[in-house]
Amino acid sequence: MTIVGFVSLVICAITVVHYYLWRRLVRSTTRPGRVRRVLTWVLAGLAVLAPVTLVASRSEWGHFLAWPGFFWIALMFYLFVFLVVLEIPRATALLVARGLERRTRSSPEYRETGGGTTSVTRGESGVRGGVQGEGVTWGESGARCEGGDGTRGGTGTEVGGVIVVPGPGGTPPAAEAPTEAGITRRLFIARTAAAAAGAGALGAVGYGVGAALGDPVIERARVVLPRLDPRLNGLRFAVVSDIHLGPLTGVAHTRRIVRMINSLEADVVAVVGDLVDGTVAELGPLARPLRDLESRYGAYFVTGNHEYYTANGPAEWVEELRGLGVRPLGNERVEIVHGGAVLDLAGVNDIGGTVSGDGPDFERALGGRDHSRTTVLLAHQPIQAVQASGYGVDLQLSGHTHGGQMVPFNLIIPLQQPVVSGLGEVGGTQVYVTRGAGFWGPPVRVGAPPEITLLEVRNEKL
Image (cartoon, rainbow, N blue to C red; front, side, top):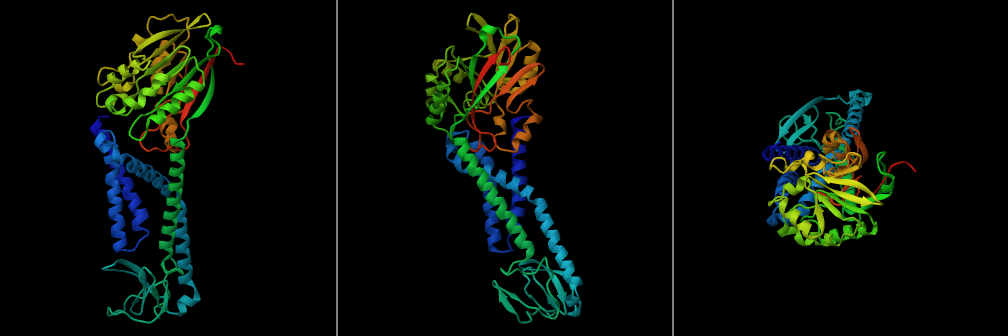
């Protein structure tokens, strides 16, 4: 898919979601008038803010939009999710209200008072539906609105600011009858659903912000590689991906990750892509703590798709990291000698570099090696294991998925990636996918906390 096609798809999706939010949060919960107009314009402005943030946050001039824009995107998403989930109970409540209306209409009291006929009239204030009888129309609020000659008629009592007239035309239907607060059952149901969705969305986003900005979880994993030389038993990899240095992160974010990795005392540090969301000029100072990474056999890096989205491309970051003591593995491999045995550590570029001629080259990275050795491959996307398995790779270390970052995205990722998080297998190659230590877009993680993995390889189960 081209960039233009992707942007068009995003704008279309945002438009549809905001229209749905307007229907459920504005139109269904307000009566025609000033309040509805104001809320409509507010929601329209937020609909424009969302795509503008996605584009502008990649440029220095648009960094100020990052916090409000991405926060709204997260809130928008969870409002949509909760409202969709509430559609069934909302519809059920409306059916119950209609049932009450039918029972009211069929009651002896209703028939004795003359009943009435259902009618809908449209005035300046919008649609007013109700029961009409003897020249009396019940409005949306349940108030007696006008007589057959267009004049306001009848007397009544005021309930919650609404004049309720039990006139000779019969009682208003149950679904449209005012509650004690002076609102119809339909309006009450709509507002209750909107309030529940709002509370749920705010709770989810608030929790997710705390998780995204807090310390990553240390996940410890042990992978059995049957072909592993026994002398390599216990070799440990600190795996981190998707740090996403950008407008919403500071240097403290990088320092914390480096500190946590160093505390693991790993033999190898593997940074498997999506380190940055900007140029060296913009984010270079945020990456400098990486020079303090500690491990027995060094720190290694492969590109992710986001390195190819930066204005100057990944080449400048490859050189910057080399200067910080982190070795890039651009379609190449190195030997890790441990306990007198050798393990091949290879790395391939991300698929995102294919368009610019800098994509993965598995033959260059894996061809011509000693197949008696165990091979561990660093590749940003789990889907790259499909090709890696053809080269007899024993273990692939990946990121990219963020574990879904925000539930229920974790249910969608399997449509594009073979493993969402943790350990899986693709064509005989084991694949470990770390959830990433940062976040992309909204600073929110729900159901997929940030992660740094300490992975140990062995040739047999203990």
